Length: 188
Image (cartoon, rainbow, N blue to C red):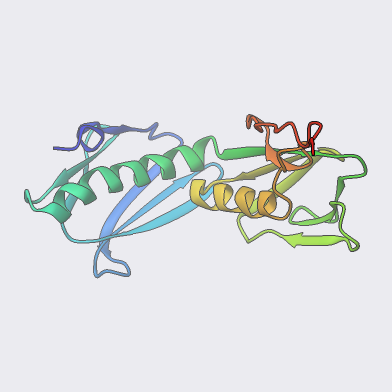
């Protein structure tokens, strides 16, 4: 039995509204969560039951099949992320390291980056994600969807991964880049 799936999801009913109805992409259940930061929906496959009791969402598996067990923890985590996303939101911070490497925000979803290439790199984030530049070297990715925030941050990092010799590139704020020494006096 999934230890994560057993935990109920607590929410404040004065701020968050959770609605469970028939339908969705899989023709079983559609879970909709509304909060101060927005609305998110999730289509649920067969194999789990979801109910609301006393400001808690309870996810339970229907059977002990492999799919029932795997969906139990999965859907509990996804719904918990939706509740957290519409109340607090998610953010991921990135840093640009390197001489002459910098970024500029053109709108709240468009970045213009100078990353040591012969050209300027343009990046436009998806709908539902907001980009914030604190200065020319710090990027913050914000949104209500945890997967979308993480994917956007990974795509920006992928534009110029940190290299191990000088540490130049785009990295997560909490990321440690393992440095290599380079050529250290090769002898013949």
